[in-house]
Image (cartoon, rainbow, N blue to C red):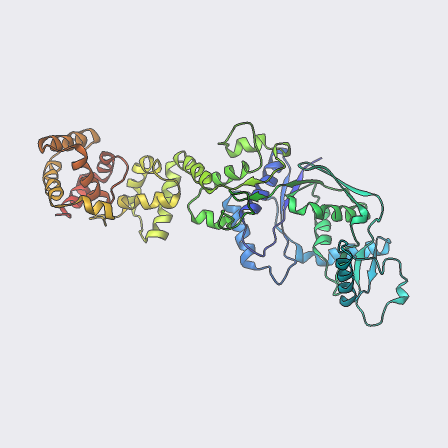
Length: 465
Protein backbone atom coordinates (compact mmCIF):
# COMPACT_ATOMS: atom_id res chain seq x y z
CA UNK A 1 0.00 0.00 0.00
CA UNK A 2 1.37 3.39 -1.01
CA UNK A 3 1.03 5.84 1.88
CA UNK A 4 -1.01 9.01 1.32
CA UNK A 5 -1.42 11.53 4.14
CA UNK A 6 -2.95 14.97 4.31
CA UNK A 7 -2.62 18.10 6.38
CA UNK A 8 -5.98 19.83 6.57
CA UNK A 9 -5.90 23.21 8.35
CA UNK A 10 -8.86 25.56 8.61
CA UNK A 11 -7.98 29.07 7.38
CA UNK A 12 -9.64 30.85 10.28
CA UNK A 13 -6.30 31.94 11.72
CA UNK A 14 -2.58 31.57 11.19
CA UNK A 15 -0.66 28.29 11.19
CA UNK A 16 -0.13 27.83 14.93
CA UNK A 17 2.62 25.76 16.47
CA UNK A 18 0.37 22.76 17.17
CA UNK A 19 -0.77 22.65 13.56
CA UNK A 20 2.83 22.95 12.42
CA UNK A 21 3.73 19.84 14.42
CA UNK A 22 0.79 17.94 12.92
CA UNK A 23 1.99 18.93 9.46
CA UNK A 24 5.54 17.87 10.33
CA UNK A 25 4.46 14.44 11.60
CA UNK A 26 2.40 13.84 8.46
CA UNK A 27 5.27 15.01 6.26
CA UNK A 28 7.89 12.87 7.99
CA UNK A 29 5.67 9.77 8.04
CA UNK A 30 4.99 10.18 4.34
CA UNK A 31 8.58 10.84 3.35
CA UNK A 32 9.73 7.89 5.51
CA UNK A 33 7.36 5.57 3.61
CA UNK A 34 7.94 7.12 0.21
CA UNK A 35 4.33 8.22 -0.19
CA UNK A 36 2.43 11.42 -0.95
CA UNK A 37 1.82 14.32 1.45
CA UNK A 38 -1.24 16.30 0.42
CA UNK A 39 -2.53 19.68 1.56
CA UNK A 40 -6.23 20.43 1.99
CA UNK A 41 -7.52 23.84 3.03
CA UNK A 42 -10.75 23.25 4.94
CA UNK A 43 -12.42 26.55 4.14
CA UNK A 44 -16.07 25.56 4.47
CA UNK A 45 -16.59 28.03 7.33
CA UNK A 46 -17.09 30.98 5.01
CA UNK A 47 -17.69 33.52 7.74
CA UNK A 48 -14.36 32.87 9.46
CA UNK A 49 -12.14 31.73 6.58
CA UNK A 50 -9.94 34.44 5.10
CA UNK A 51 -7.48 34.66 2.24
CA UNK A 52 -5.00 36.22 4.67
CA UNK A 53 -5.11 33.06 6.77
CA UNK A 54 -4.76 30.84 3.69
CA UNK A 55 -1.68 32.80 2.62
CA UNK A 56 -0.23 32.60 6.14
CA UNK A 57 -0.69 28.81 6.23
CA UNK A 58 0.98 28.33 2.85
CA UNK A 59 3.77 30.74 3.77
CA UNK A 60 4.30 29.01 7.12
CA UNK A 61 4.58 25.58 5.54
CA UNK A 62 7.02 26.87 2.95
CA UNK A 63 9.12 28.54 5.64
CA UNK A 64 9.22 25.25 7.58
CA UNK A 65 10.27 23.60 4.29
CA UNK A 66 7.39 21.13 4.45
CA UNK A 67 6.68 20.68 0.76
CA UNK A 68 3.40 19.07 -0.27
CA UNK A 69 2.70 16.98 -3.35
CA UNK A 70 0.47 18.38 -6.08
CA UNK A 71 -1.84 21.37 -5.75
CA UNK A 72 -3.61 22.29 -2.54
CA UNK A 73 -7.24 21.14 -2.41
CA UNK A 74 -9.85 23.68 -1.30
CA UNK A 75 -12.73 22.01 0.48
CA UNK A 76 -15.36 24.66 -0.23
CA UNK A 77 -14.92 24.17 -3.99
CA UNK A 78 -16.00 20.53 -3.58
CA UNK A 79 -19.44 21.24 -2.06
CA UNK A 80 -21.34 19.65 -4.94
CA UNK A 81 -19.38 16.42 -4.57
CA UNK A 82 -20.06 16.35 -0.82
CA UNK A 83 -23.78 16.87 -1.40
CA UNK A 84 -23.75 14.16 -4.07
CA UNK A 85 -22.49 11.65 -1.51
CA UNK A 86 -25.16 12.67 1.01
CA UNK A 87 -27.87 12.06 -1.59
CA UNK A 88 -26.29 8.71 -2.50
CA UNK A 89 -26.52 7.70 1.16
CA UNK A 90 -30.13 8.88 1.21
CA UNK A 91 -30.96 6.75 -1.82
CA UNK A 92 -29.25 3.72 -0.28
CA UNK A 93 -31.19 4.05 2.98
CA UNK A 94 -28.14 5.10 5.01
CA UNK A 95 -29.51 8.62 5.56
CA UNK A 96 -32.88 10.29 5.95
CA UNK A 97 -34.55 13.67 5.85
CA UNK A 98 -35.25 15.34 9.17
CA UNK A 99 -37.89 18.07 9.39
CA UNK A 100 -37.42 19.05 13.04
CA UNK A 101 -37.68 22.77 13.62
CA UNK A 102 -35.05 24.68 15.61
CA UNK A 103 -37.60 24.94 18.41
CA UNK A 104 -38.10 21.18 18.51
CA UNK A 105 -34.35 20.60 18.62
CA UNK A 106 -33.98 23.09 21.44
CA UNK A 107 -36.75 21.31 23.34
CA UNK A 108 -34.86 18.01 22.94
CA UNK A 109 -31.72 19.62 24.35
CA UNK A 110 -33.54 21.12 27.31
CA UNK A 111 -35.28 17.84 28.10
CA UNK A 112 -31.99 15.95 27.95
CA UNK A 113 -30.42 18.49 30.31
CA UNK A 114 -33.33 18.22 32.72
CA UNK A 115 -33.09 14.43 32.72
CA UNK A 116 -29.28 14.62 32.94
CA UNK A 117 -28.88 12.65 29.75
CA UNK A 118 -26.29 13.24 27.00
CA UNK A 119 -27.57 15.80 24.52
CA UNK A 120 -28.32 13.86 21.34
CA UNK A 121 -30.85 13.98 18.55
CA UNK A 122 -33.62 11.55 19.46
CA UNK A 123 -34.33 10.14 15.98
CA UNK A 124 -37.76 11.74 15.60
CA UNK A 125 -37.69 11.49 11.80
CA UNK A 126 -35.54 8.38 11.53
CA UNK A 127 -38.39 6.03 10.61
CA UNK A 128 -41.28 8.39 9.91
CA UNK A 129 -43.02 8.43 6.59
CA UNK A 130 -41.89 11.43 4.51
CA UNK A 131 -45.55 12.04 3.68
CA UNK A 132 -45.89 13.36 7.22
CA UNK A 133 -43.43 16.16 6.46
CA UNK A 134 -44.74 19.61 7.28
CA UNK A 135 -45.28 21.94 4.34
CA UNK A 136 -42.76 24.66 3.62
CA UNK A 137 -39.98 23.18 5.77
CA UNK A 138 -36.56 22.52 4.21
CA UNK A 139 -35.17 19.35 5.81
CA UNK A 140 -31.65 18.46 6.81
CA UNK A 141 -30.21 15.12 5.81
CA UNK A 142 -29.02 12.99 8.70
CA UNK A 143 -26.88 9.86 8.81
CA UNK A 144 -28.86 6.75 9.72
CA UNK A 145 -26.25 5.53 12.16
CA UNK A 146 -26.28 2.02 13.60
CA UNK A 147 -27.96 1.97 17.01
CA UNK A 148 -26.54 -1.31 18.28
CA UNK A 149 -23.08 -2.79 18.43
CA UNK A 150 -19.91 -0.76 18.60
CA UNK A 151 -17.51 1.25 16.44
CA UNK A 152 -13.84 0.38 16.83
CA UNK A 153 -10.84 2.50 15.85
CA UNK A 154 -7.46 0.78 15.80
CA UNK A 155 -5.39 3.89 16.31
CA UNK A 156 -1.63 3.90 15.68
CA UNK A 157 -1.09 6.09 18.75
CA UNK A 158 -4.06 5.53 21.05
CA UNK A 159 -4.38 1.80 20.43
CA UNK A 160 -7.79 0.12 20.09
CA UNK A 161 -10.53 2.57 21.07
CA UNK A 162 -14.18 1.51 21.19
CA UNK A 163 -17.45 3.41 21.50
CA UNK A 164 -20.94 1.95 21.80
CA UNK A 165 -23.07 2.97 18.84
CA UNK A 166 -25.91 3.77 21.20
CA UNK A 167 -23.80 6.71 22.40
CA UNK A 168 -23.73 8.26 18.92
CA UNK A 169 -26.67 10.03 17.33
CA UNK A 170 -27.70 10.60 13.74
CA UNK A 171 -25.49 13.54 12.79
CA UNK A 172 -26.41 16.06 10.12
CA UNK A 173 -24.78 15.52 6.74
CA UNK A 174 -26.47 18.28 4.74
CA UNK A 175 -27.94 21.41 6.27
CA UNK A 176 -31.39 22.69 5.33
CA UNK A 177 -29.82 25.07 2.80
CA UNK A 178 -28.11 22.13 1.09
CA UNK A 179 -24.59 22.88 2.31
CA UNK A 180 -22.53 19.96 3.63
CA UNK A 181 -21.30 19.75 7.20
CA UNK A 182 -17.65 19.48 8.14
CA UNK A 183 -18.07 15.85 9.22
CA UNK A 184 -19.32 14.80 5.80
CA UNK A 185 -16.86 16.91 3.83
CA UNK A 186 -13.85 15.50 5.67
CA UNK A 187 -14.83 11.90 4.92
CA UNK A 188 -15.57 12.53 1.24
CA UNK A 189 -12.33 14.42 0.75
CA UNK A 190 -10.23 11.83 2.57
CA UNK A 191 -11.73 9.12 0.36
CA UNK A 192 -11.49 11.02 -2.91
CA UNK A 193 -7.90 12.09 -2.17
CA UNK A 194 -6.97 8.47 -1.49
CA UNK A 195 -5.77 9.13 2.06
CA UNK A 196 -4.49 5.93 3.60
CA UNK A 197 -3.55 7.51 6.95
CA UNK A 198 -5.17 10.32 8.91
CA UNK A 199 -2.68 11.81 11.39
CA UNK A 200 -4.13 14.61 13.50
CA UNK A 201 -4.58 15.89 17.05
CA UNK A 202 -6.36 13.71 19.57
CA UNK A 203 -9.05 16.37 19.93
CA UNK A 204 -10.43 14.80 16.73
CA UNK A 205 -10.64 11.28 18.18
CA UNK A 206 -14.37 11.55 18.93
CA UNK A 207 -14.94 12.70 15.35
CA UNK A 208 -13.27 9.54 14.07
CA UNK A 209 -16.10 7.32 15.34
CA UNK A 210 -18.75 9.34 13.50
CA UNK A 211 -16.61 9.64 10.39
CA UNK A 212 -15.98 5.88 10.42
CA UNK A 213 -19.74 5.32 10.17
CA UNK A 214 -19.89 7.43 7.01
CA UNK A 215 -17.00 5.48 5.48
CA UNK A 216 -18.79 2.21 6.26
CA UNK A 217 -22.14 3.44 4.98
CA UNK A 218 -20.51 4.28 1.65
CA UNK A 219 -18.62 0.99 1.53
CA UNK A 220 -15.29 2.82 1.49
CA UNK A 221 -12.06 1.60 3.07
CA UNK A 222 -11.39 3.18 6.41
CA UNK A 223 -8.07 5.05 6.61
CA UNK A 224 -5.63 4.22 9.37
CA UNK A 225 -6.03 6.77 12.16
CA UNK A 226 -3.28 8.19 14.35
CA UNK A 227 -4.41 10.74 16.93
CA UNK A 228 -1.46 12.51 18.49
CA UNK A 229 -1.70 14.15 21.95
CA UNK A 230 -1.94 17.91 22.08
CA UNK A 231 0.82 20.27 23.17
CA UNK A 232 0.54 21.89 26.60
CA UNK A 233 2.43 24.78 28.12
CA UNK A 234 5.53 24.27 30.26
CA UNK A 235 3.28 24.38 33.35
CA UNK A 236 1.06 21.59 32.03
CA UNK A 237 -1.86 23.92 31.28
CA UNK A 238 -3.54 24.25 27.91
CA UNK A 239 -1.15 25.88 25.47
CA UNK A 240 -1.78 29.62 25.19
CA UNK A 241 0.04 32.66 23.83
CA UNK A 242 1.91 33.11 27.07
CA UNK A 243 3.42 29.63 26.58
CA UNK A 244 4.29 30.14 22.92
CA UNK A 245 1.03 29.26 21.13
CA UNK A 246 1.86 31.66 18.32
CA UNK A 247 1.65 31.54 14.59
CA UNK A 248 4.62 30.07 12.77
CA UNK A 249 5.25 33.52 11.31
CA UNK A 250 5.95 34.81 14.83
CA UNK A 251 8.80 32.31 15.28
CA UNK A 252 10.27 33.41 11.97
CA UNK A 253 10.02 37.04 13.08
CA UNK A 254 11.67 36.16 16.40
CA UNK A 255 14.68 34.91 14.48
CA UNK A 256 14.33 31.15 14.73
CA UNK A 257 15.70 28.91 11.99
CA UNK A 258 13.20 26.53 10.33
CA UNK A 259 15.50 23.54 10.90
CA UNK A 260 15.60 24.30 14.63
CA UNK A 261 11.82 24.63 14.84
CA UNK A 262 11.38 21.34 12.97
CA UNK A 263 13.82 19.58 15.28
CA UNK A 264 12.09 20.97 18.36
CA UNK A 265 8.59 20.06 17.16
CA UNK A 266 9.81 16.59 16.24
CA UNK A 267 10.84 15.99 19.84
CA UNK A 268 7.46 17.20 21.18
CA UNK A 269 5.77 13.85 21.54
CA UNK A 270 8.15 11.68 19.51
CA UNK A 271 11.44 10.21 20.57
CA UNK A 272 14.33 8.10 19.36
CA UNK A 273 16.32 7.03 22.38
CA UNK A 274 18.21 9.91 23.93
CA UNK A 275 18.77 11.72 20.63
CA UNK A 276 17.98 15.43 20.83
CA UNK A 277 19.74 16.98 17.82
CA UNK A 278 18.21 15.24 14.80
CA UNK A 279 18.80 16.33 11.22
CA UNK A 280 15.94 16.31 8.75
CA UNK A 281 17.50 13.45 6.80
CA UNK A 282 17.87 11.44 10.00
CA UNK A 283 14.31 12.29 11.05
CA UNK A 284 12.94 10.97 7.75
CA UNK A 285 14.93 7.76 8.18
CA UNK A 286 13.83 7.20 11.78
CA UNK A 287 10.30 8.57 11.98
CA UNK A 288 7.32 6.29 12.40
CA UNK A 289 4.19 6.44 14.52
CA UNK A 290 5.41 3.86 17.03
CA UNK A 291 7.69 6.55 18.45
CA UNK A 292 4.78 8.86 19.31
CA UNK A 293 3.76 8.85 22.96
CA UNK A 294 0.22 9.00 24.35
CA UNK A 295 0.75 11.79 26.86
CA UNK A 296 0.63 15.52 26.12
CA UNK A 297 3.92 17.28 25.39
CA UNK A 298 5.06 20.46 27.11
CA UNK A 299 6.22 23.41 25.06
CA UNK A 300 9.32 25.08 26.48
CA UNK A 301 10.46 28.31 24.83
CA UNK A 302 13.82 28.19 26.61
CA UNK A 303 14.58 24.76 25.12
CA UNK A 304 13.59 25.93 21.66
CA UNK A 305 15.82 28.99 22.04
CA UNK A 306 18.79 26.88 23.16
CA UNK A 307 18.24 24.48 20.28
CA UNK A 308 18.10 27.39 17.87
CA UNK A 309 21.45 28.58 19.20
CA UNK A 310 22.90 25.17 18.35
CA UNK A 311 21.58 25.38 14.80
CA UNK A 312 22.92 28.91 14.42
CA UNK A 313 26.40 27.86 15.49
CA UNK A 314 26.36 25.03 12.96
CA UNK A 315 24.75 26.92 10.09
CA UNK A 316 26.60 27.78 6.89
CA UNK A 317 28.23 31.21 7.25
CA UNK A 318 27.22 32.39 3.79
CA UNK A 319 23.58 31.52 4.40
CA UNK A 320 23.69 33.32 7.74
CA UNK A 321 25.17 36.40 6.09
CA UNK A 322 22.19 36.63 3.73
CA UNK A 323 19.70 36.11 6.59
CA UNK A 324 21.54 38.73 8.65
CA UNK A 325 21.56 41.25 5.82
CA UNK A 326 17.77 40.92 5.53
CA UNK A 327 17.36 41.50 9.29
CA UNK A 328 19.75 44.47 9.28
CA UNK A 329 17.64 46.10 6.59
CA UNK A 330 14.28 45.28 8.17
CA UNK A 331 15.12 45.82 11.85
CA UNK A 332 17.91 48.42 11.76
CA UNK A 333 17.41 50.29 8.51
CA UNK A 334 20.94 49.42 7.38
CA UNK A 335 21.61 48.63 3.74
CA UNK A 336 24.67 46.43 3.51
CA UNK A 337 27.13 47.07 0.71
CA UNK A 338 29.89 44.85 -0.63
CA UNK A 339 32.40 45.92 2.06
CA UNK A 340 29.91 45.27 4.85
CA UNK A 341 29.01 41.91 3.38
CA UNK A 342 32.67 40.92 3.22
CA UNK A 343 33.12 41.92 6.86
CA UNK A 344 30.06 39.95 7.89
CA UNK A 345 31.32 36.85 6.15
CA UNK A 346 34.76 37.22 7.71
CA UNK A 347 33.29 37.77 11.15
CA UNK A 348 30.34 35.35 11.06
CA UNK A 349 32.17 32.52 12.81
CA UNK A 350 32.74 34.76 15.82
CA UNK A 351 29.33 36.42 15.69
CA UNK A 352 27.22 33.28 15.59
CA UNK A 353 28.86 31.85 18.68
CA UNK A 354 27.32 34.66 20.73
CA UNK A 355 23.77 34.67 19.34
CA UNK A 356 20.66 32.62 20.08
CA UNK A 357 18.55 33.87 17.19
CA UNK A 358 18.80 35.82 13.94
CA UNK A 359 17.58 39.06 15.49
CA UNK A 360 20.33 38.92 18.10
CA UNK A 361 22.82 37.99 15.40
CA UNK A 362 21.82 41.02 13.33
CA UNK A 363 21.95 43.34 16.34
CA UNK A 364 25.43 42.08 17.21
CA UNK A 365 26.52 42.56 13.58
CA UNK A 366 25.58 46.20 13.09
CA UNK A 367 29.05 47.52 13.98
CA UNK A 368 30.58 45.57 11.08
CA UNK A 369 28.36 47.19 8.45
CA UNK A 370 27.87 50.72 9.79
CA UNK A 371 31.02 52.76 9.08
CA UNK A 372 32.44 55.50 11.24
CA UNK A 373 31.85 56.29 14.90
CA UNK A 374 29.44 53.81 16.44
CA UNK A 375 26.53 54.76 18.71
CA UNK A 376 27.32 53.64 22.25
CA UNK A 377 25.19 51.56 24.56
CA UNK A 378 25.09 52.70 28.18
CA UNK A 379 27.82 50.38 29.40
CA UNK A 380 30.11 51.27 26.50
CA UNK A 381 29.62 54.99 27.13
CA UNK A 382 30.74 54.61 30.74
CA UNK A 383 33.95 52.96 29.59
CA UNK A 384 35.00 55.98 27.51
CA UNK A 385 36.03 58.47 30.21
CA UNK A 386 38.76 61.07 29.73
CA UNK A 387 41.57 58.70 30.70
CA UNK A 388 40.30 56.01 28.33
CA UNK A 389 40.05 58.46 25.46
CA UNK A 390 43.63 59.59 26.06
CA UNK A 391 44.77 55.97 25.96
CA UNK A 392 42.85 55.37 22.74
CA UNK A 393 44.50 58.38 21.11
CA UNK A 394 47.90 56.96 21.95
CA UNK A 395 46.87 53.53 20.64
CA UNK A 396 45.74 55.13 17.39
CA UNK A 397 49.25 56.45 16.87
CA UNK A 398 50.65 52.97 17.45
CA UNK A 399 48.15 51.37 15.08
CA UNK A 400 48.96 53.86 12.33
CA UNK A 401 52.26 52.19 11.60
CA UNK A 402 51.65 48.69 12.99
CA UNK A 403 52.83 45.86 10.73
CA UNK A 404 51.53 43.33 10.05
CA UNK A 405 47.86 44.10 10.64
CA UNK A 406 46.95 40.75 12.13
CA UNK A 407 45.53 39.51 15.40
CA UNK A 408 48.86 38.53 16.90
CA UNK A 409 50.44 41.93 16.27
CA UNK A 410 47.34 43.80 17.47
CA UNK A 411 47.19 41.71 20.66
CA UNK A 412 50.88 42.39 21.35
CA UNK A 413 50.48 46.14 20.77
CA UNK A 414 47.54 46.47 23.18
CA UNK A 415 49.26 44.37 25.83
CA UNK A 416 52.38 46.50 25.51
CA UNK A 417 50.34 49.64 25.99
CA UNK A 418 48.63 48.23 29.09
CA UNK A 419 51.96 47.16 30.56
CA UNK A 420 53.60 50.51 29.83
CA UNK A 421 50.79 52.42 31.53
CA UNK A 422 50.65 50.06 34.50
CA UNK A 423 47.08 48.98 33.72
CA UNK A 424 45.45 45.59 33.44
CA UNK A 425 44.71 44.46 29.89
CA UNK A 426 40.95 44.90 30.38
CA UNK A 427 41.36 48.57 31.30
CA UNK A 428 42.77 49.18 27.83
CA UNK A 429 40.93 46.53 25.81
CA UNK A 430 37.40 47.31 27.01
CA UNK A 431 37.43 51.03 26.05
CA UNK A 432 38.96 49.99 22.74
CA UNK A 433 36.12 47.50 22.22
CA UNK A 434 33.56 50.17 23.11
CA UNK A 435 35.00 52.65 20.63
CA UNK A 436 35.12 50.14 17.79
CA UNK A 437 31.79 48.33 18.32
CA UNK A 438 29.66 50.69 20.43
CA UNK A 439 29.22 47.87 22.92
CA UNK A 440 30.89 46.40 25.98
CA UNK A 441 30.60 42.89 24.44
CA UNK A 442 31.65 41.57 21.04
CA UNK A 443 33.55 38.74 19.39
CA UNK A 444 37.31 38.65 19.95
CA UNK A 445 38.56 42.26 19.95
CA UNK A 446 41.57 41.56 17.79
CA UNK A 447 39.50 39.57 15.32
CA UNK A 448 37.19 42.58 15.08
CA UNK A 449 40.12 44.91 14.40
CA UNK A 450 41.57 42.60 11.77
CA UNK A 451 38.23 42.41 9.96
CA UNK A 452 37.54 46.15 10.16
CA UNK A 453 40.98 46.87 8.77
CA UNK A 454 43.42 49.62 9.65
CA UNK A 455 41.58 52.52 7.99
CA UNK A 456 38.19 51.84 9.58
CA UNK A 457 39.74 51.12 12.97
CA UNK A 458 41.67 54.40 12.88
CA UNK A 459 38.57 56.34 11.75
CA UNK A 460 36.53 55.03 14.65
CA UNK A 461 39.22 55.72 17.22
CA UNK A 462 39.96 59.25 16.00
CA UNK A 463 36.25 59.96 15.86
CA UNK A 464 36.06 59.50 19.63
CA UNK A 465 38.53 62.30 20.34
